[in-house]
Amino acid sequence: MIPRNRQVIVALDPKGRAVVKRDMELIREILLAVQNRTDLTPRPLTLEGHDEVVVGRHIEMLSEAGLIDGPLSTRVSQPYDVVLIKDLSWEGHDFIAALVNKGVWSKIKQSYSAAELAGLPLSVLKEVGIGLLKEWAKSKVGLGAGTIGSITSTP
Image 1 (cartoon, rainbow, N blue to C red):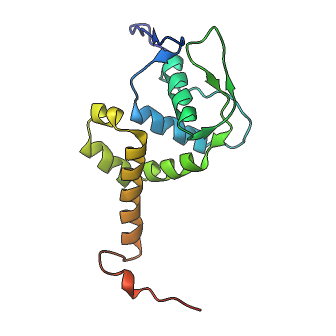
Image 2 (image 1 turned 30 degrees about the vertical axis):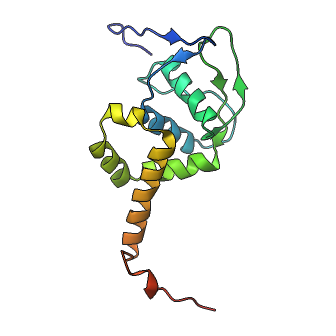
Image 3 (image 1 turned 45 degrees about the horizontal axis):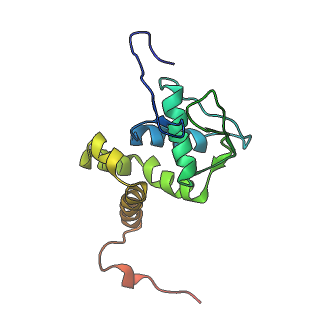
């Protein structure tokens, strides 16, 4: 829902879809909301405090990127394809695993401005997030540079 004192202008591309700037914080919120669902019933997702057209277009982009599963429904009355979200894809689970870690997400947000985040390809952000998560996971079990040789194999 849009507060009364704000106006949202939505541009449409030649296919009639909403044109938005990627908002990585919103993408994280969407993926977390999908991850926290308690059932697999395909349905649209709304997020309080966000314009439904902007959320809808981000969900459409996440579907195109292969991060969420669910059938697309094209409606002439809406400037985006409606994705009836069922769940995260395997790639979506991997991506949110990195971004759900508050230390990883904080490090990313400290390192990049919102504009830089929006401009990063999703694959690069995923690689950076998973790289940071790997560092964190290794540190939790005492693995650092040069310690990998201390693990022995048990028959």
